[in-house]
Amino acid sequence: MFERFGKLGFTRHTRVQAFVEHLERGEITASRCRHCGRRSLPPRADCPACGHGAFELVPVDPHGSVLCATMIHALPAGFEDGGPFGLALVDLREGGRLLAPLGGSFGGKLPAAGEPVRLVVRRSGDGDAMRVFFTAERSGPGDGDRRQQEIGT
Ligand SMILES: [Zn+2]
Image (cartoon, rainbow, N blue to C red; front, side):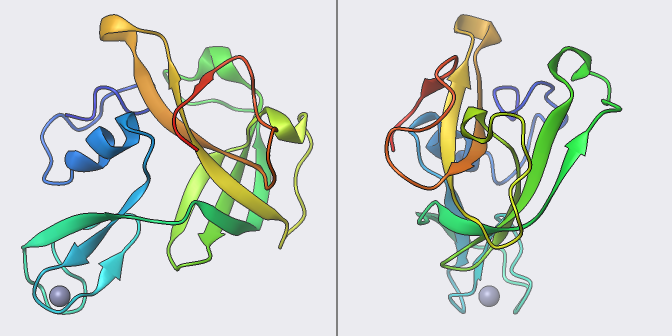
């Protein structure tokens, strides 16, 4: 189920599989509890507020700001060919916090805390090797990493 997200599929069957299907359409989504309306990002199948298990995925505004960022030099299995790379913890302005690799618009430099960014959904490879993921990019039109295909906005 998650085989198209990131570089390794750690979880093949999950109730939030639709998160990846939305990514394939260029959308980042949060879960919203059908019982109490609590919104969670990253999406959670079971509501952290009321424990209810019924939820829907709703698109979120991909704009936010950097909480902190770091450069990863010691890479985990499956990522050895990609580093070093930057990683940012991003607070989205509608709420929610996601970890995202820094995209090409940062030119290998780390952003300052508070810097505005947007999350951009990307696709690499094709066929069975196709993967979807998102990167944090400087906020503004026309920037980003041109080596990977951008999906949607
Ligand atoms: Zn709830």
